[in-house]
Image (cartoon, rainbow, N blue to C red; front, side, top):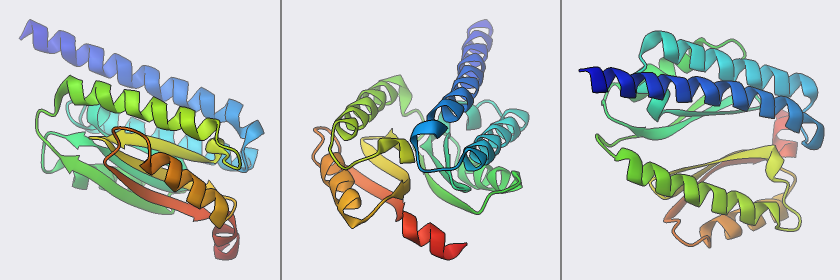
Length: 194
């Protein structure tokens, strides 16, 4: 029991550190991306509120296993969760955050997927981000990249069809990636929706 409590405390501490760091990163990156400072603040607020709701609801499956990405009020939930009811709970909690325009559920129920697949996914995530960073005509700051079980999830805005094609090509050809799930939109799509 003592070991379980120690592991639980470490998971909560890691999740809280991640929330704080992500919020700080969002503010710094606003200068270099296409979102306005107001939109970055709104997205960071949504992100923080969702994680707060997760923390209040359940630290066992939500905080350590569900990844939250927010772009232009669109929320992408990814991760490998242990409990079959977690995705529904996570979506309901995400909708409680003020300013949410859309919630995309890409969570998988995979009990005990473990640390090894998580470590491999983090390596793949960094490889994809590194390749996109050095790709001409790609502004990786305008979208988020998340890898779960060697599947890449993309959320955000691209400038045009050429950028979208480049992002998808680079992501698909990254060694170890088995699938790409794109929730990218072209910037003019969002402009036409407002």
